Length: 332
Image (cartoon, rainbow, N blue to C red):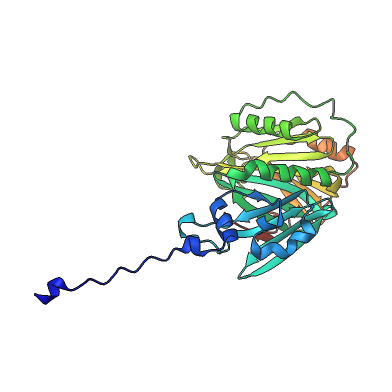
């Protein structure tokens, strides 16, 4: 009976982790999400990367890339950003958090061979293919796609060099882009480029073919665009897919013509009930860029010859040429 009148123990108050944090940490936590943010002042620089702010405070783009994580498990004071990207007048610097320490990398404009924008549903990527043969790849959430495309366009403007063609060729065939995806990508490329762009080669998706290993596949499509200073390659990342396989990826690779040191073209073996791919190899310093074409890209080959680029022998023609994976700055 005495137990009925005994006072119960007071409940322990839950730890108020939010108000226990510093105002600066709370402010960073409140803004955290899948978005890539532009850093406008030193207090917006993640604390882990703050030592690099003074060097890049005047950069054209100073961006912080969030970690890939569920906001429900994040807390103020945690490392909420995995990388910082600084793009200035002289080149690109990237800082990333790896195993509790900061690793940095720097690239000047003359070391950039090509610029690549990728997209696969919510996943976006910005890649720099380097003349050294490696690749710097930065992943982000596509909610920040417009900002990352603006950063990419700035890089393109610094890598283009002098126009390799005084004007677009007058002999470009009248190409009808019959696929909605590639038509939309063409219009976006036109809107982003400061110079005229011409569609010079188009292969619609859905054609029966054989891949490099002789397997029956369907093509995913290809669109080649020419500007006075660039070759723009638009595709679905992989040239083939299995029958009924869905493909949501999109890849735009901008190659400054000033970076092309030579090229090679290998025609597909004739015969068979299904066509095989021709291969166009662009040599960009130590970077080899391989392009699979179901039809001969005659206008592109003519432009490369007009630039007096040498024909070269590719490395080991019996194996697919691949761009080295290089450094992968991955995030959300």
